[in-house]
Image (cartoon, rainbow, N blue to C red; front, side):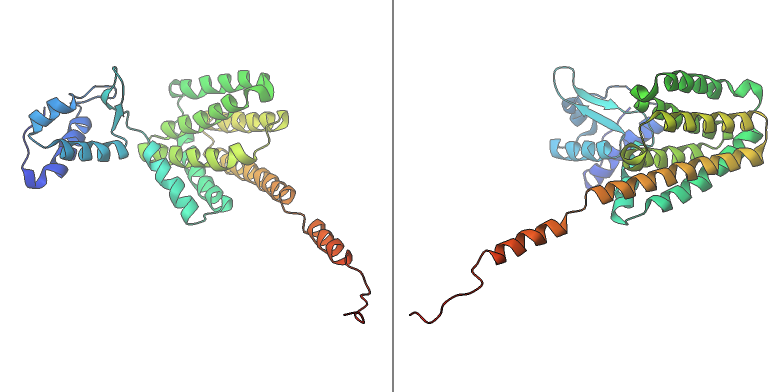
Length: 271
């Protein structure tokens, strides 16, 4: 599977060989690579060169290095996790607002849902229908199942993206959803019965429009679903910011009292 590499390009060659083995199917998710000692011999490289290459592969999300007697180097499933992390850093560094992310989500969700409605043959709706039933069951249990319900919400959106047929749409939607849930939904969306019921009703309406092939209605409902949730979170964020602001008047009163504690009249006639 692996071959000796030229020392002048050892670092890049190791990474490329492992990447190619994964992408071409020679290595599958969960497969365990040879030990470091075995890889050194197969690749004819130093221990430092190998370890540096493995660190890069780990940062790319291609392999996982586990410690202990059951440890080793394992191939990770290819998913949007690494891109989600990069997007999270970008969002924070560029100070991208909740409204801007919401606008992007409305555009993407609208496009994906419209396309899903055009591909929604009854034989292809099984996954989406199953997830709706799961969401209904979780909603019946109320806020106690909040996290599981929101995961079901996310899964329904991603299932619609898969139904639309373009893997790139699903990949980007998963990345955006991961960050929207992490930084906004978990922080600001109310964890109450009303929010769960409203969200479920919106999801069911979207899926119904998709199943009927009504692309215009499906897109409009998907956009409104995101817009309504964002508005709710903006209001919650505003209330949260108001409740955590420091009490300036109280500080001023303390200072004023301190000044008034000195005598108003001081007899300066005495030495």
